[in-house]
Amino acid sequence: MPPLATPAPLGPLTVAAGQAESVPGDLTTNVATAARLVRRATDLGATVVVLPELFLPAYHPPALRVDPAGTDLAASADRRVADARLDPLQAATRDGSAVLVVGAAVRHPDGRRTCSSLVVDRSGDVTVGYDKQHLCGPDEIELFTPGPCGATLVVEGWRLGLGICYDACFPEHGRAAADDGAHGYLCPSGYLTGSAHRRDLYYPARALDNGMYVVFANIVGGTPPWQFNGGAAIYDPEGRPLDRAADEGEAVAVATLDPAELTRVRTAHTMLVDRLADQGTGRGLLVG
Image (cartoon, rainbow, N blue to C red; front, side, top):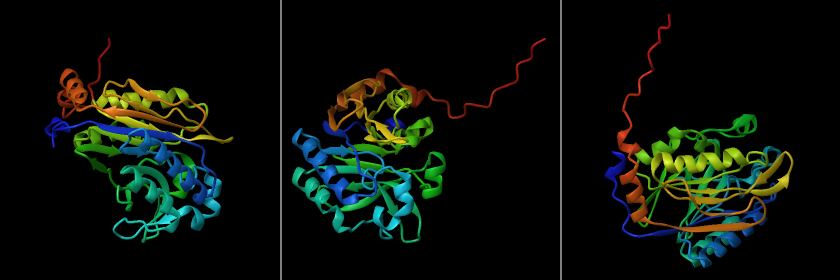
């Protein structure tokens, strides 16, 4: 499908990117924190809420390694998740009539373990929305199996591509979402202290590359070497931050995605349609 073949949505969509500290291996406590963030976001008018990578078990490889039974959520063959520990999150999305995207470790029926985004819909149903394709570093490669494909979430006519952290370091991943007609790109992430330059470069770049909104959620707190730097943000289709949280402390960034602005930017900046189908590999240059 050509990138601009998908019409802009008919109406605006208010989204939130949350950040908080999660406790290694304590899924019950982290669910309670996530539910609190969802309620805070919906009180501010958000319809879609994005929370960080692996937020439910915590992004802490030692805990994920030692207690897979306690940190993982089991998925059925049709990617549904039924786990009583998620009840507070399901209640929060039902009460706020919101859709939640949140990071989790998922165990599939065939034994695969994936770093995934769960989608909790307005009725409280939980599905595995996306499995991270680009695993980052030896810990993730040891712990998880990469996902086989991308995914797009549709909410009120907005097509929202799903990525997780390192996925967004690859321009091709965001472009694949745009090629699938995405108007926005949702990225639960886990950026460590010391990575602020890259954190603040990749996500606005993906927005500008593709003329789409980007919602970036990150973790805060923790102890070295697993200490995170927040900065949750929502970027407009030219890569400008509409709202941004500080590098520390629990927070929710909220902004409204505007279909008129999406159309304006894609009309003014036509990289999606001007891109050559075959960029070529280059020719040698003779110097003599």
